[in-house]
Image 1 (cartoon, rainbow, N blue to C red):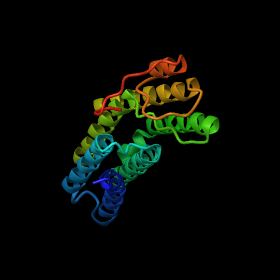
Image 2 (spheres, rainbow, N blue to C red):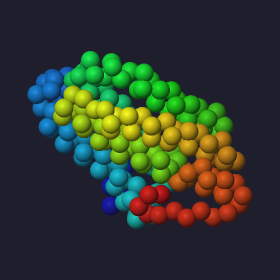
Image 3 (cartoon, one colour):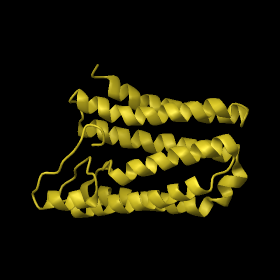
Image 4 (cartoon, helix red, strand yellow):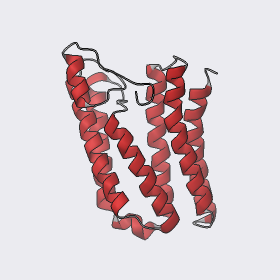
Length: 199
């Protein structure tokens, strides 16, 4: 039972690799299968943390591993969508670069200050994850995405700014911080409320 969260985390990476291989082999011929794999990968991300908290094995190591797996999985999906629909992804290259730059900044704030990768799992990151899922699934199935893509970019930037503030405010590295407001409360020595579902 205690291995379930780790298996869910690694399965997400395996699914991402499988999607990339399928895309390289068949292009858009099996886009419905790729869509299904993306949904399964997203669900593993939802449940790995919930299961770990229920089993009371939600360690820093697991949360950092979860964050690494998330980045690998979604980058593999992004690469796959580029291979499927290069013209569309090229048309959105500036927005994609913007998100990647903010992701890099959030990484550097945490790593330079604490020598650890960020793993806030904040509320805005979870909202961003939902829009990433919806937008990339729309791209995979239709070759295009406008409203959902724009919402993905907006929530992506906001979530990375929130992450930067969280680790700029904290005096020691912590994980599962819902927002920069909660980081302020921690700095003041106050307890913050977490839930099994989100944090």
